[in-house]
Image (cartoon, rainbow, N blue to C red):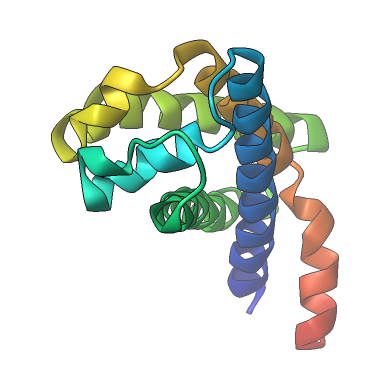
Length: 155
């Protein structure tokens, strides 16, 4: 039951981290004078191809945001399972950031090349890396949510 609590706490932290990353990417897109939906539309091109790369919000935008939220929430659950109760607060925070950076290099160095090369072509490199670091910082705080999840399960 404790593993389930760690996984759910990681899922929670992963979702919050992914939302923060999406917000950061929208803000950085606005700074570069692009649509705040450009990253969500970019991820939507996984399902809809090049027509998803539009300037504004559309139906396809939701699927791109959902893909990003799903992937990073599941990564958070895996992180919660792997880390569990090990390490100090600072060690887990550092591991969260390092795991997010490793995920960034894996997905943008290998995965997206084979699944959706458009993401490799049009992704904003620096804001995406900083977004992953933000995600990792929030992911590394997953133990905050373990107590709340444990209370639900009566542990």
